Length: 172
Image 1 (cartoon, rainbow, N blue to C red):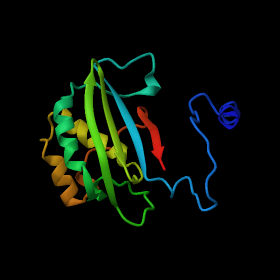
Image 2: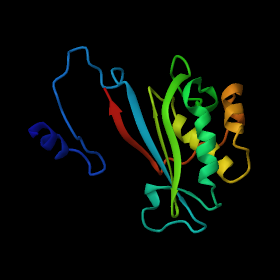
Image 3: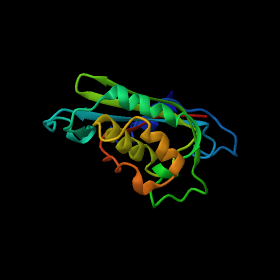
Image 4: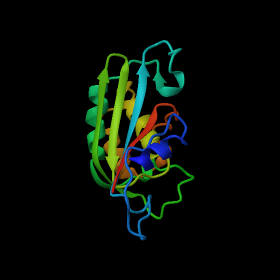
């Protein structure tokens, strides 16, 4: 308890430690993780928000969250995610296992939650950018499956803006 309180007193308000425990000397915060989870939130209305502008992505075009969710389900499982890998990625390979993904709407907010064993550089934001194209009706639901198979980043959606992306948890 004291470690958590002490650490949090020295962190910026946007970062919080929830627990602390002793670990083996071989433990590595990045490489010992079994899974990570992210959330991406999109304010979906025709007027950009004034309050919380830096807390959400924004899309003025009406998004169909049900189609986005259906398209996201193609990403479940172990795949080569090269189509969602940014040029600056230094990972040895692009194979990752997505264990959970979903898109839902609550009023003007569209939220995507995703968990995987690991992520590539900008992978979540690139997935969101492609799902937005599906949600806007510019691409069919099956397009996400085609992107996975094609492994070509140049034909996938644009990288979604960084606002709206949240690291939710890590599991060890």
